[in-house]
Length: 302
Image (cartoon, rainbow, N blue to C red; front, side, top):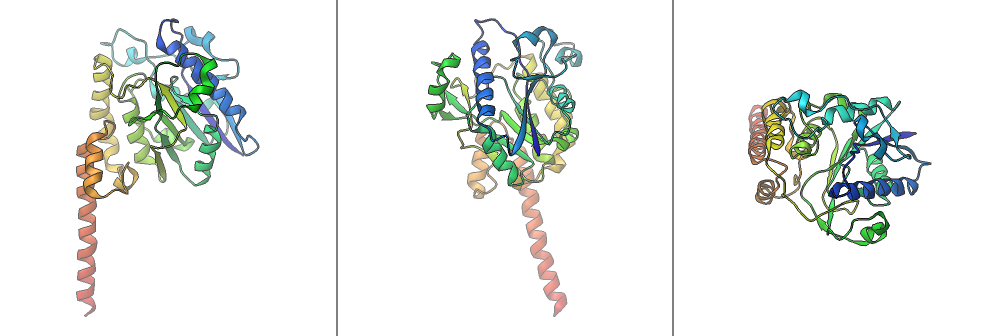
């Protein structure tokens, strides 16, 4: 039977922190979605990895994996503020689950619709080895687990960023993520580009009502030292390792006309115009070569 593991990283925060209620909502939504999952078709494990000081916020219905030992501070000594985990450390904890087939990673402020796991299973059955889903945005009027039914009923608004990743377990060892921490921009960029580089049959879902986040911001992040750490790490250490594996047909908007595709690449903050130009040029060169080869072959046949 197919085995799916959904891992999150709970964190203990003050009640005044907006993550306090968002995290509780996420946990409950995961529980509800598992209760409504068709577990005769697949096995599902909800699990967590955390620092030792965060253990007591982990729900009892989660499988608590071993604690994290290091943070971004061990990677970059100049960052002496927040103790943020490294995404690769979190994902590697799923190796503690035996015979795992698929990994799901979401941030702890991303809540799920009740039919989330059943829908994911359907996409997996279609043969996708990587699936990413864009969340819906809800207004800040929601702040309690008891409001979940109303949240489910809200369509909300779309969001351009990527914050839900489902992928085959063997892909994990192929990811270049060392040095990237969670809770900061370029986490999603790093995960997305890594998985698009190694997946054979990815699926990018922009327009489905499968997950949601409380808050309407799109680009309201702070460009602090953590932001520049992740950004620099991606462009200097990760991008050079994976860019040669990019295929434009696996990226967003691949089925759009060239001009529309270019405009959408420029507008989307999670993908980069320079990659588009390189990939489009490579694609055009390949098409030109195929035409030239065909002409040469026809001449030789005469």
